[in-house]
Image (cartoon, rainbow, N blue to C red; front, side, top):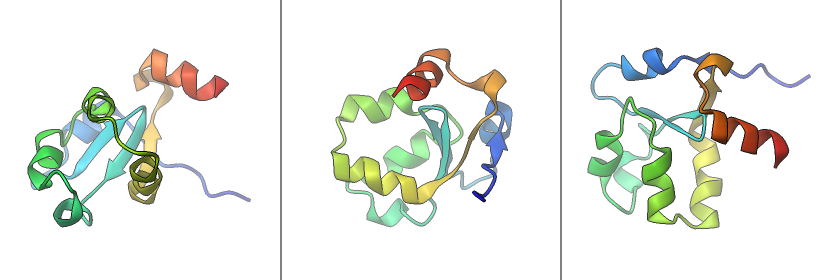
Length: 95
């Protein structure tokens, strides 16, 4: 039996305390506190999007497949259905 996925609201992510290390990418929630010092672009770019939806920022950079796989390690949950971005939500269902 698979473990139940933790659900978050956008408000919960936005209210994350300082230093904030949680953000949203494509309706999934990530905590990168253990990755800050390893991020090739520097920790500042991660801290700048903390508490926010960083999907567009993530896509604009053009991350490699390896980077996308690495992100799975830091995934801690997903948004509740009501808060999901409909485009990303429907793409995730059909892909």
